[in-house]
Length: 285
Image 1 (cartoon, rainbow, N blue to C red):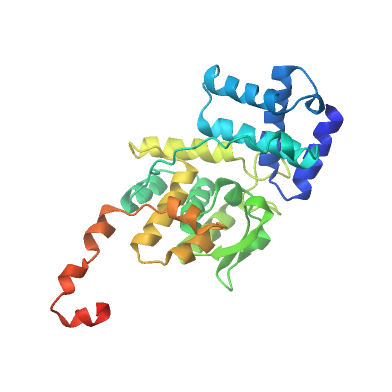
Image 2 (cartoon, one colour):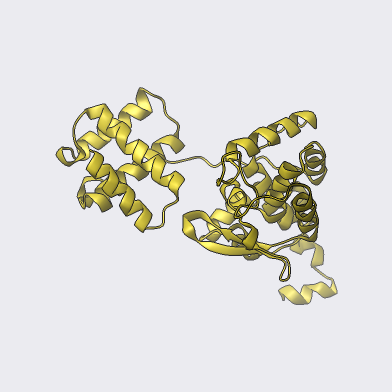
């Protein structure tokens, strides 16, 4: 199994999968093998279905968890074992996408004001101000900041690099943080371990503490800041395709899920009935 695991990890990395995704996929395959106590090469579609039914009906795993296991097992048989027929008929679990938690502008301000440490205030400001994933903001290097062009180079999901805007307010706080702490290169936000960037767990801890201090009732996570960034841009009139590029989404459909159309936008949208009989009717014939 160790040799097969190493081969699967190599296949994942050759295709540019993130280290976190590699770990999840391998863990899912390990659970599959542990359930049957047989090598994957000796198993087929029936064993895969039995394991997935066990996840659903015995362990009551969420759809998202089951989808991750399907992804890992499909990769194993599709790519590493080159037996795609085993998983060709395995369906993807349907994951419900609820409305994301969105913070208002005033709540974002209260959140930032509640963070005493300038380092973590800078991290949260950068996360919201640039719409970054938690892994992206933690892995920013000092050389990624281009204050002349006012952009940040981001090592995105799946190894896809992109540039995002560097807001003046974010740059101001980053300079304040730099003067105060002089972080050791290469990381803009180094962690407690020498040579490592700050951990996502540390960011979440400070974010939760600040949310509690600000008496926010909403569930505040780094991803909620990203959702809020996208929604606020939409409310400010930014084209959804620009938002797609800033968020680093391959598909516009993913971006649409991130951008919730708020009551403010709905109420401000003019109905075509209001232009009937007016000069503006020329636009609709």
